Length: 301
Image (cartoon, rainbow, N blue to C red):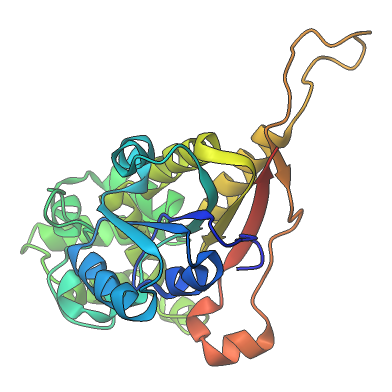
């Protein structure tokens, strides 16, 4: 909330509305004349957020839009606002999605391998990726999106297992991953399936490409002086955010030996956080799921 620098009357955009926790806090700061725009591609999240905002933030105009922030230009045209004063991205899968077994996001529950954030419009599921991708492509996404050390071996075990029977549930996949990773490696770190499930979720929802489009659009829509806050939960998201901030905060790109600037490039953003902010020990105790979060802030010039 400090990073967003909200004022009464601000137009605030929550690109990842979820359970509206951030939006409830933002509403207190932009009331009574502010506008709150919330985007989510999950129908259950939108319905729950609408109910909660009606009870806890009745004095703020709330526009809740179903969609993906990769299509931010179209969504904000739909909202009919000229600009936005502050924008928040809280990336990744939300806690309610993790805690609903039938969504297939979690390796802790036995459920269909789905992982779609918007089942109504998305067609490909994690099960279909497992069934149809080549061993090479499976290894690639496990390595690139999950940063999984054992990517090639897990891909090999998946291909061998699917030749015998379809892999359709989370626990089937967990057992295959456990079999692929040597016992000595499984004893270190967290759950052995964590990185593979992350990789599949990112592939199903095309999260990295969506994030790049969303950040570019967000920067365009920010009013001068407006703030952009991004919370990321793994190094891929954080790297894309960091590079976008660096690119937009860069001035002249001419070779240093040129006497005058000929590129005309001017910075669009000012980076507020040179290094990402991390959760405090007290926050980690209250909310263990905040362990991997990195928060970056930038301001439109």
